[in-house]
Image 1 (cartoon, rainbow, N blue to C red):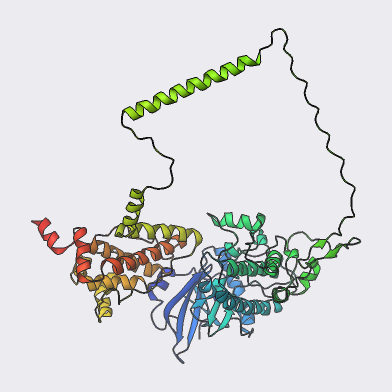
Image 2: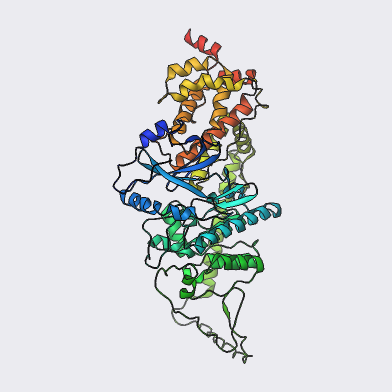
Length: 578
């Protein structure tokens, strides 16, 4: 069995030993780590097989740099026994906890590799066919969240990437570090959540179950629109918008969806739904109840109020007022009012009379006529000069010229055009934190040899090398196009959230640059923990190589033509050597 989690005074985690040994069978007692599933705010998640029964699990290794935050995380791990008792079909079950090389970890049920984020259409609203499964998964995840709230647990990181999909069932995961809400705690011990989904009060390190309802509202907004309500150039800018800006509600949303989103995304926690059940009732029946008083909303899960306390009672309605479905008071219609008196017209100014020293109006008329004549003469003379020199008067600009369009079209069909386009996409993806979705190299398009996987053994020394060795790359280059095809195929399968696999990718990219002469597609990662920008850039570059190979190296002839254009063809190199 895994050893218990370390005490707060335990030695610092040895991540160098972790990255060196984590793939060895038995590194985690009783398990074999097979692949990486992803990474989050507090660590990395791997797929592992229990050796005794051959069943798959997910193991999350917790990575926290700040020592104070680490102590708080370790203290919360003592409550995992409480989390493990929760049995709900829409929650990822927590099975065990432990520690290895000073790194705490959680063992969870394997809920699949697909998440709700994978189903969200990028930058567009879902179609009717896409919307139905999205909403079905949302409702299941919301029921799982309500199960946490029923046990006085708060998630603090609700988002589509934490909703796992397997066998037609959606399960909410990554709640093992949820803060246990008690009447004695009024603030968080650390920053939590993802900025795009974080409630405004989290900026002030305060929150309770209503913060989860806000994040659930952001998730619903993304499912219905294809985008999050607030974006920015930095996390701080996004958080400030959550605190001050009103979300835009697109026209395609129904009235019911607008009302529900408005309640969920209210800046004040007391104005949101008191429980997830209320949210689901409003979403399914269209009846959005009035915002409860702060005290009433806290009683549902036993949590305290964050921020200043409001009045404990809803203000009474005035005579004739009623409450609409949106929860807002609607005033009675005003009685007929007498018409407003006509606006007095300004009296006309008396005509200006000429007096001694006054200027005659004909003087101004004469000056204006003289100016018109002078301008006309100057314009005609300029036109005549240009025409005499054979210069054609340009017409009004009506868009890019045909030559420009032709140049850009030709550029888009070149290797350089693909490189420029993919790097631009990588920059945009890094700003939105949405890496390019990779797909396997189409072996039917590239006339690949049937034993292409055999060349992975040829590339193995390059993958295992801690740094790129040009002489080793030249030896592998002698295997020709199959080695390059295999390198490109491997780029589509590597995990760019993993620092070790990013270094392997860098070696492959330098090999491809050396073998083909195609530049500007080399990426380097500084450490073992890639940033979001590095992950997005790696994915964009890998996708660029896939398209380059499929379009310009589909056959041996195409491949050697590509090399010849860049002086990398063997015959050209021999000629240069002479």
